[in-house]
Image (cartoon, rainbow, N blue to C red; front, side):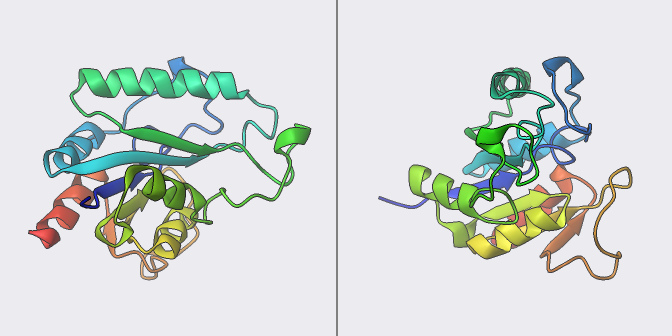
Length: 189
């Protein structure tokens, strides 16, 4: 069976506006050009896999049911825009959390690549033909650790851990998801 390609996308700052500890579906607001970027990947036979750290669960800011409702609303918005997501993977853990069952050191929290490895196994993904796109060092490191290409979205409203001349090993540095899709798919053809 032929392996598939995937665009692994961070959620906050990549698809939706970064709202600290987004805890309600009403807070969702798509970033400009996110829909077009997802569509371009889909039109080129990429699976769209969202991989997101959600330590707000461990910190007690919201529960898993709220997160599921947020992802359901996001999925509906994107389907309406013909930019479907194939799967959501999330890490609810944080070592300093206050909710005991989630207050652990885990293997799934980015920059660890477990969410990408799990998706690759479940969906038969060729990680070497895939890309991780996000707005943080953790996103880029997770992609690199999994063997993917990576794209860093420069987000002026979200503090990033590097200077502009040292984008921590990202293969591409872009302004948004659409630019990442155009660059990555353009390199593949």
